[in-house]
Image (cartoon, rainbow, N blue to C red; front, side, top):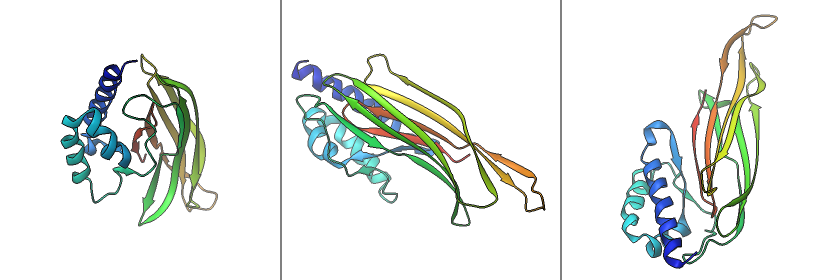
Length: 193
């Protein structure tokens, strides 16, 4: 891959992430890596810097937009590497957590694409009136050139009444929709159920 091809590859994927991140009302959470924004974007896509900066500024109160791990891609080549993240969605009532869904993903890449992905999901109950019923549905797949892996997972929790003997009074189906990219970046959407 030539330098020009790599820079076009980076620009293309940065443009996709910028477009994807412009949906905060739909629950989209993009974590911009500080090294990527300050060191790589100015070299390979300086014209996209303003769009990224405006997204970061618009979300500056949430602290969700910077991911402080070092960037793993140099501006001249995709450096082989790996990353491991655990996005989550936790439901709260009156400020206390009641249940959570976690999806850990470990992935590796070479100079061109993702070479392996190992996802695992689990639920956690924090309130005594809920039970963890386990995995409800899941799906995982690559894009055409295997530079992005998409993972969707839905979990099932049951809310029980305080009535003696317990009667189920509700179901919750939290979801995570995660994208991991060759080079180490990632983002996710969540639905608390």
